[in-house]
Image 1 (cartoon, helix red, strand yellow):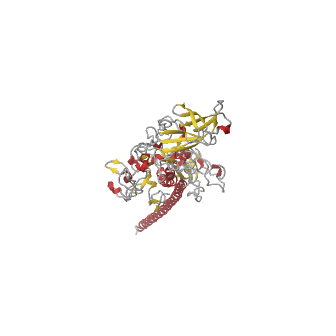
Image 2: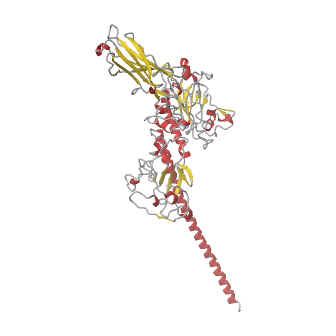
Image 3: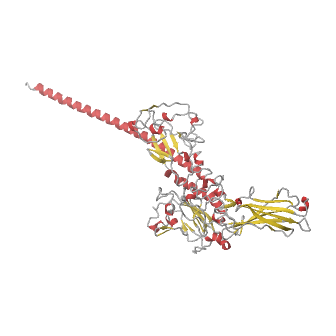
Length: 615
């Protein structure tokens, strides 16, 4: 009987322990539930941020590509951030600034310019945005943007890692100093230009961007936009513009409407520059076309508006490339009336300016016109993209009375003709009808002067970075990543039989496109995409680091393009790689063809093909 109270106490103790165990389990359950809920809440926050950041990134890529494929004079550029002065203005917020030199290359995302709704993060804050100076205005007007371009923003200590960044700023923080962070108590004003430190923390507030920081003082969520994200879309847009703008311009460089000796049925194309390191930088190709070279780089050598230097090897000012084949002259009379009584031709400037002075007289019938001309032949004309600059003082004709030695009076109009020669030179003949001596009230004779400057041979508009229509191509140096192919019978050497045919003879035949059995392509370009095999190794002289597989036409270990070019990897199995899985980003731009064939409606691999005939 005495032991019962102890038993009761033991039972009560066990009961209390049970209750305590239940309480602990309940507490653990509640704590775990709340932690799980909090975890899910955090996940939702980050998931929301990831969604809007990705949406902003895709909008930036789309905006860039759409403008690049249109008429943007700086294709590839990205918009600037929202103009700081538009902060808090409902009518203007979200509109990109017109320029954004640092530090204004960091600001709010220009959502309205991008055609988006106002994107906000999980804390309700609008997204922020940083852009490389060279990829935005005004930097994009001077920095080339092409397949080999890189970002200029550092991220987590990696230099040139990003072209742009999209940032969810998160809720306000009281930032503690240390770990790369500067102490700052964030506030969120509703007016006035925004202070970067009130939205971004640590390195992000100093434009030295990071994705994490010590001490839990950073809640920015950063999404990187790299060159590899942008360039595939850019290349597709550029190929389209090359088909619309560059190909027609290339067809029009040497035609029968400008040059005698070229059949009206087909244009003539310049010789290719042998494939070499396309640059930029010293030790690269000089882009000089070479006779009997039909495949390689576009002959984008420049003879005007540049200074020859090791860092600019393609600058070949007169007479480095263009020279007189022989001294121009003598002047000749091309009409049956009148006569030239005396003539003297001299160099006004050695190897640059030639002047011929003469005396002329009329026949018994003074109404008959007298026309005099001077001919000059310039070498290496077809080794590049040349044109005539007849403005200013490059071609001049003067006349005066022979009795008083008075001042020369200009004679107009001065007209000229050009003849292409089979050695790649061109002969320019210019002149004018001289004044009637009787009508002028002169003595028995008159004097004339013909003057020619070598600067009359200029560069084609394709080489002019300031050309309103074509300048984007040379300004952004797309010629460095473009392979060029033509055929012998469409170059100067074949003037007597110009126009390739469907023949396997390498001297007579055209090239093929997309595994066609018909050889009917006279000239084409291959826009080599960003290197798939050696992105860090370019620029270099290895053609296989630029074009892929069939366009490289491997012979053993040698990349040697011959007669077949493809828009897609139809024959990649040739070197043991599945055609379906072969990496491929070449884009073929058809320049000229001899008859109806299948050509891309747009110069992108995803565009449908259609039948077309060269205009």
